[in-house]
Image (tube, rainbow, N blue to C red; front, top):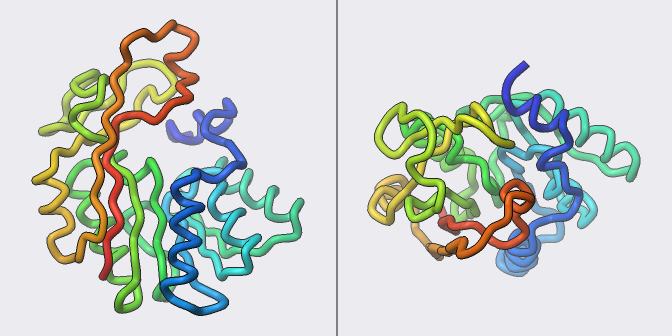
Length: 221
């Protein structure tokens, strides 16, 4: 069983509520493309909170993740709600469908790999977008409080040694590396959200309710 399966079995990262930023962006995309039914790929979908939101809005939704446990949770939730989506077990570096999408979403996920694999994933996403298609993602910033914690496996890449994400790879980006990663794209929005933990009691280390330090990007093919 992989580390992500263990995390989802413990009930972590299984919220049913979509990220507010993603919901706002979906509304923007619906107006931008001016089509009733859009094709979305929820990349590294986890338990599928964004897949559920997209399916409930009547779009064609494709969801992939490398955790069988998370996909089982998602399939059960889709069935309970009478919603439909194409759900596949897949590595983040591959697209399991011969489809081109209007939008790809990858929230708090794509930085969990080595930089070579992250580049592969971004290239695959680019190749499966329609002309003018958009990608929204978040990536870890090297200004994060936990930057440098754990075992360093390559430059700016660490494996977390303990806690809720024990054994998970984290790559941390600076501005220049993100611009290099998206050199083939038109960057529409790049925002670094910096959050400094001034006081944090132990109970809130794993139950953090405020935004963490990260990059947010919207890029267009």
